[in-house]
Structure formats: structure tokens, C-alpha cells
Length: 208
Image 1 (cartoon, rainbow, N blue to C red):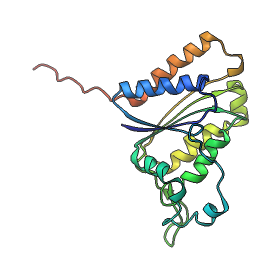
Image 2: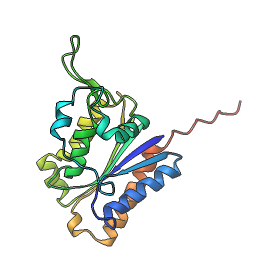
Image 3: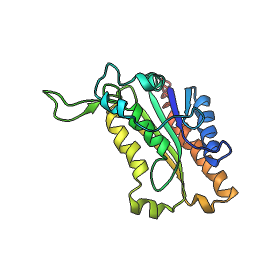
């Protein structure tokens, strides 16, 4: 497994950082090669410029401003997103990463004479995971529609490999969380990652 982890949080001491560390540890323990893109540490500019928009469909140049990110995207077979859910959605910097890096010719193929709709470009990605935190409760998040989760696990998944596996875990009511709830959530994330990264055991042959 070649896992690209997109991490987005401004506070290096946050609980989200603890989630990231848990994810990385368990991926590596499962034998995965992990690369991390820390959008705040870079820092990554989330704004799609007028120049980038003008060249958006020009596959010869549209990767140039974000070439290192595109190279990492092409390298991986697994995409993992670790971020806090703000206003039920993605942090602006993470949304901007999707805007600037998921360009035509890489993330998806544009319509043409024989195709009326876009087609998947991330066919190298066979695994997609989201590990997040939410200030709101589970029921309120679902009532609103969980747009952040939908963007990645439905929108991004639609342009990945056909049978792309997914994994998701969220700590809801983060603002009223306790040491116990946070510890339990990290254990849940660890179990989710182990299952996500695991390989089915080979059946042992029965003695004749």
C-alpha cells in the first residue's frame, strides 16, 4: 500500500494531530509506505488563481503550479484525509487543495466527442479514507447532510477505481469531548485503519 495522507489543521497540538499520528502508526505497522502532505505546514495556498482557472482544461500546463502534489497523487494507491469538520464541511485549505490539485487529466477526464460526462482519472486509487472531528452531534451533522464527508467519500470516490474501498470515523460533539471519549475514539480509528489496511488471511489447507 502506498498511502498519501492529506492533513489539514492549523494547530500542531490539536486532537486532529493525534488522529493523524494514530493513522500513520497503524498504516506503517501494516506495512504501508506513507507520505504526508501537511497543508498548514507548507503552507498551501487554497485560492485558485485567475491564471490557473484560465489554464484549468489545458492538460499540458494545468499541473505546473501544484506539480509536487500531483506527483504524490499519481504515486499513491490510497488516499487518506485527516481534518476537522468546520461548518459541516471541509476546511477552506482542504477544499482549495481539491480545487487546485484535482485537475482535468489527473483526477478526471473531460467530456469529449464520445463521452458526454466526465470519467474517472484516479483509477490508481483503490482505497479512500476520512478521519475527522465534528463539533456538532451525529444527528445534526446527518440532518444537515454531512457535505464534507459526501464531497470525499462520494465525490472523490466517483473518480477513483471502480471498487475503491472506503473507511470513515468521526468524533462528534468534539467541543464537549472528554479525555475518555478522545481515548476511545483514537482506539476506534486505530481499529478502522488496521481493518482498512489489512490483507485477508490465506485459508490454511486442511490435512488429507
